Length: 227
Image (cartoon, rainbow, N blue to C red):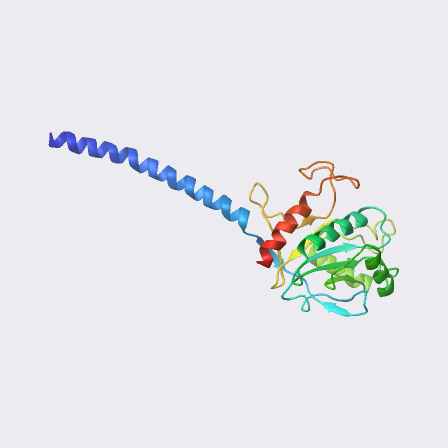
């Protein structure tokens, strides 16, 4: 009888151990997925910048420490994606409505976008927050800054490209780190899109699109950082 008991006990162990390992594996996968959903990736330190805003005030990255903020490149006369980006930024501004949240909109057309004109632009699109800074300065400096952000801005010397730019937005935390969420494959997305889309998945950009999925996830991630 003792031999049979030992055999039974050994068999049970052989069954229990693999089941426990599998259970721990699934627990680890669940924890990992939860981590990626709730945590934001640190891309890099925000590049240093010093530019002039619509109120003739010098604004630097150091001035923004302590605030969660967004960074975009645009220009006021842009007839295509900039109005869409500004509209999505306004919606985010309206939803967040927090003194510790700000927006940095850097003009790639500083010859036209003087502080006076940028002030008029801010009033025209209905900016409410004193923390939304429309910045202007030297075009070469701004081009180099875009390169440091790794956000595309056209070459100033190329007449056909100089006012082209990306619709991507950087999210910066209170400590001056660029942050982002992970995609479904658990890879960092790096930047968020300021565009509208024809589809809810955000695969087909369209100026008149009714979908803006990155606007929604930006609102979620800004709120995470503000907690």
